[in-house]
Length: 114
Image (cartoon, rainbow, N blue to C red):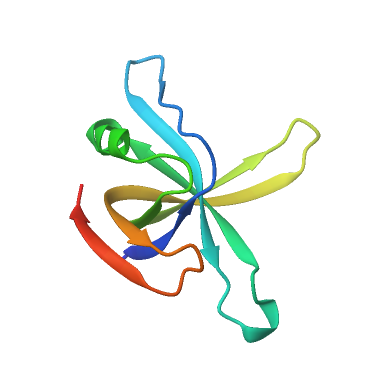
């Protein structure tokens, strides 16, 4: 089973793009706080992608908003032009929920699903 639930802050402005076949998609990074006490105030930057109708839900959110994302992990292997083998993983978004949080990330209040 490939299920992911993750929360974090949208790291950049959101820009919806369209494939050559007309399918809307949105790529972004979600910042998630590291849990180790030795890494206080450090974040992981998790690549995410949303496809099709789920992209419409992102009209209600913007950079620096906090989300809970449910999705699945997708990995892609490819070679660069110079022959290096790359393995890239990202979260494919299935659903999102916007949350309110204080600036210090100490308390989270649910505002309901978008």
